[in-house]
Image (cartoon, rainbow, N blue to C red; front, side, top):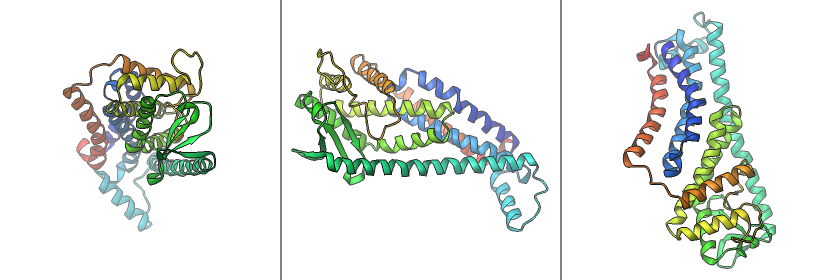
Length: 324
């Protein structure tokens, strides 16, 4: 079991530092946002599992040859109030650290969920006072504001898309359709669940490069996924113009700037303006200078790597005895 703990610790370090840095600097994610999203989730999940697992296996090492046997022995010791003579101070520390980290991650996930639900509820109450349904679509609310505003507010059957009349005055009907399709894609593809998970991950471990880089990358990838959905229904020039107008707050050539639109979302409050502008630049470049999508072999390799990342720590935890 000791060798398994070392493997898990090594994997945790790799997934906490070099792996997310390398992926954040790679150029291929824009060619296949969905595949990149899967890989980011695998890195985050495997990283957390490896961190907790390394300490857990290390702490239980004196009690058995595999995790189930060792946990059974620990449970029997606790229930029967027997002295744990085989556990040294370092093992008790490792078990305590694993328990605290696991509890911290779960608690932060739940706390983030409660906080986001509260924010959305207050936001919806404000919208009920300050907005009115669009004439042709009751699921779209219009607020009176000169700045360009476009975002989605998740809420199950009560999900809505919010636009400002300032934005609607800048866009043609086709461009407005592109904005609506983009925002509704966030709702249909449940992007708010991804944002919730990665926001909780960053809140729990703000010092970890994985959490910081992953949240930034995921925010950009979901925008690309929504762009791809819009491209299935509108022409590329229309979408490019819509993104440019929404991001700058003016029609092309007007020379004025406003608040970002498609790059803003009420569920993405952690994005800075600078990061949003950078994301918009990446999205426009991706549309104007398209690169070929990943080949089937490349996609399969990335998905296989994701599966391996999740399988490796799981195997080390379930059967660490096979690894020494």
